[in-house]
Image (cartoon, rainbow, N blue to C red):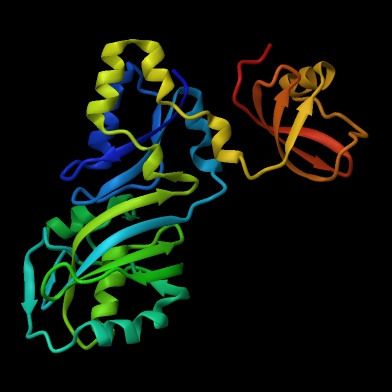
Length: 294
């Protein structure tokens, strides 16, 4: 079983819970996931299965899109409504003030990870320290907000925002900062990830759907998998003739290769995806293979 399974993560499950469940369904421990989601969050969680797990760290597109709810009038220790309320305050601002401050948050910025996060300091996840009541200094990291849009107010003092952002962005922290810019206390009351890189909600399957496919048989389960090549679709395609294919398997360079320098996804003459290769100075070299060597 090899490929990329896009899971619609349910609320109150950790990303690790999802992986543990899928190990049982898929019958393998060779799984990796891309982009941890908080337990309260739902939505797109790409899981890399079998040999596809080698692609986790090679993804080209790390942008993500979230639909989040900002609740004004309170602040919690976790930055969302699952935490302990630290402070409440009267709400004195609304839609007008929100729309006025949103443009300030577009573009590159520095963001300090929250204590309730999986970021590790000296090998220890911050959330474990936070649960012990320990607060440590964290370094701000560069992030980028590519787009932020207002989506209405479903309840009093609650506002929906759609955010497209770079890898490593904490939406909880962003919402707290937006509330502060409005002169308010605020926290996140809901979060759903709608895209992760090239993968969208349309690609996602619930755990119940995945279990039903498992019960229907291996072919039904494999049919839910996206090919590992989908990670690299933005790269130009190179079709390797049999001689060059063997060079790739053996790790041998191919000189005077008739293509422009650059990075390529590679298929063989039969259309099978082989992996990634680079051409530098007319010399073709393998970067990573996703097939068994012949």
